[in-house]
Image 1: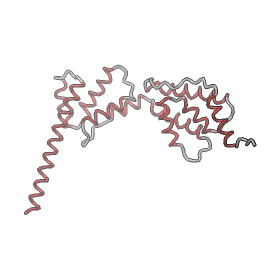
Image 2: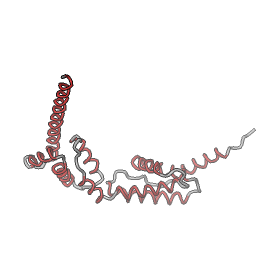
Image 3: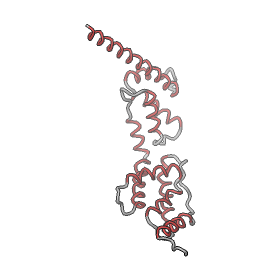
Image 4: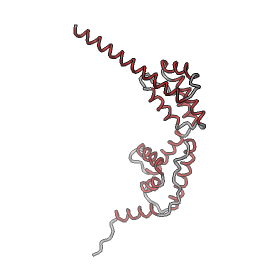
Length: 217
């Protein structure tokens, strides 16, 4: 006796058919520089919306799955991150996620704001110099400084002016000897930071020894 397919099975087949149908959607190009990703997101979003509107009606979760299938690794990570921020119980998870993505690209792709953030970064007193350089590098990815020379000049100014005083002063004094070579300045900064950490460790050991002596009396 043949059994009729359940409503659940029929729904799964409809979803699979919808996702496997024609999708003339060009994947998101994650090789673009940060300042061009907002435009690429708008292109990808609008193209996806046109395709969805031409297909048979499906639930919002299926629509979101279709968006993810062609996103590529970079955009997929962003989609999943923004999806988690959507309030629970949203009537349309697809539309809500699109809105969150629009807000994300509006905020992160303003290179003027990102450059301001870069130029306001300060090295923290307890921060290793290598971590400070890494933090600058992470923020620089969003700044689209353009030519390598401009990027290096921004880094040099940050290291000479916004490192902690005991490092920035010495870097400034020696920068002309290094002909403002970024690699040499970073290497010397790491050397100065090593001296700083050794001095701090020696001071800590000395204080500990004094406390031990006082307690033993």
